[in-house]
Length: 262
Ligand SMILES: Nc1ncnc2c1ncn2[C@@H]1O[C@H](COP(=O)(O)OP(=O)(O)O)[C@@H](O)[C@H]1O
Ligand SMILES: [Mg+2]
Figure 1 (cartoon, rainbow, N blue to C red):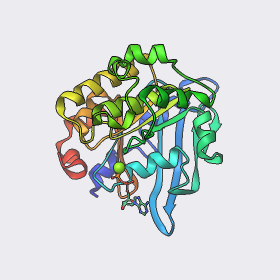
Figure 2 (cartoon, helix red, strand yellow; figure 1 turned 90 degrees about the vertical axis):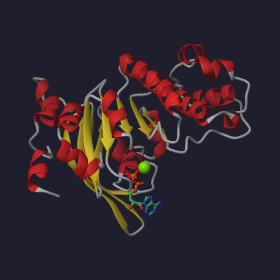
Figure 3 (tube, rainbow, N blue to C red; figure 1 turned 90 degrees about the horizontal axis):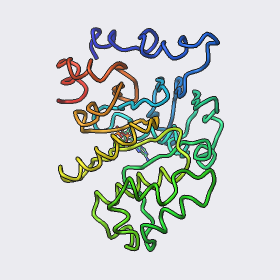
């Protein structure tokens, strides 16, 4: 990686990352912070010292080429156990996620919408949603979900896994909102979807943004992600190589070519 781009990064010095802590007179911690995360799949060292912050209500795009470590970073934050976090701290609204297991992190408000969506076979749309609401703290009720996802209302009695990819993606996002969400983690929500469906998912994500749900959005489709995001970080080989505004990436061709192949 080149020095110039490295220097554009904000590991320690960028005002965008320094601001939240400095913003309050009490020196309160930022809403979400990943601090020096190191995570492994067995012996494979994959997440190599990742640090970043997210402000409350912000959408952060987590970008980078295939294999850069985006999914691994989300899975580390959601405390899935794989990869295993061996060093570092993860803070959400004052809670130490790094000390938690996945079910505790979910209770603390971390909701991961995984790339493969994990809709439960044999259950209808509505049953998938109801199941998510069994474990407290609950989030949106069915009425609210259906008002934001009219397609799911239409298909409430259909088996979830028999729906189209786009509809299953909507169900996966809706299911996350059925729990209390403080931090929504979206792993490639547009992947494999037709452009018209991408637009529909984008509309839903815009609604989520206007509601003010703090979100980390992983996308290969950087242009679509930057369209929604306030800020972005770029990962390369398990490290943060850029941290700044979405506009800075859009305006920087060299950066885009080097790390995003755009
Ligand atoms: N379960 C796993 N076991 C071992 N290595 C893995 C596993 N999952 C991912 N990796 C490796 O971790 C690296 C980062 O993968 P990943 O986080 O999926 O990247 P991205 O989501 O940015 O495409 C890749 O080199 C990948 O091969
Ligand atoms: Mg991935």
